[in-house]
Length: 72
Image (cartoon, rainbow, N blue to C red; front, side, top):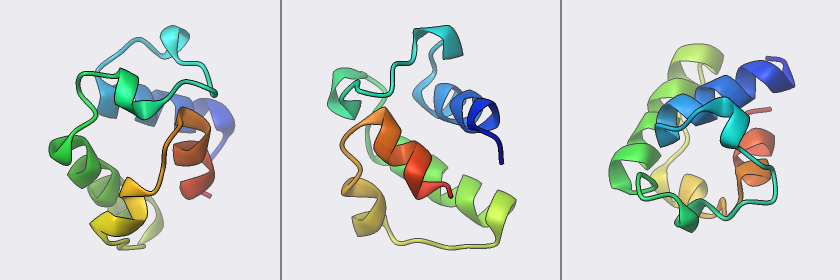
């Protein structure tokens, strides 16, 4: 998955325009970063990579860049 594809996926999960995303942004700044978003990350990881992380792993992500790295 390219960096641009990751950005599009994260933007979709956070329900924002991908142009608004900055890697250093804290996830807690987004109103939509909640348990549903965490489940969306898990579902995306399963769908795109065949990996099924648990919620505690996803919750450790604190910034947009952390989510990008998590998707590697």
